[in-house]
Image (cartoon, rainbow, N blue to C red; front, side, top):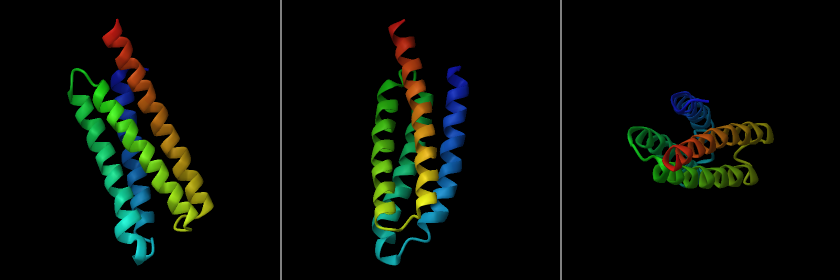
Length: 119
């Protein structure tokens, strides 16, 4: 898969997931709205910003690694949301599948960038 195709696909998948997730975080209980929900929303916004910034750089590896850390913490927050019953099981499964797909795209982009800098 070409680098440009990965960049467009990861952006689109992230954007679509963000819209879906924001509709769910709006339904979190008020007691957790300004902790867990806002943190998830901010992490997703940070992730999108980081991949957009990586796309603009010649050497993308550091930004892509940063995006990977953000994505990993987002996964943890979503798992917490499921365990605290803010997300139903089917919503959690959808979120997990979506984040795994985004993670695979990110990993592919990172591998592609490493081969460019090594080669």
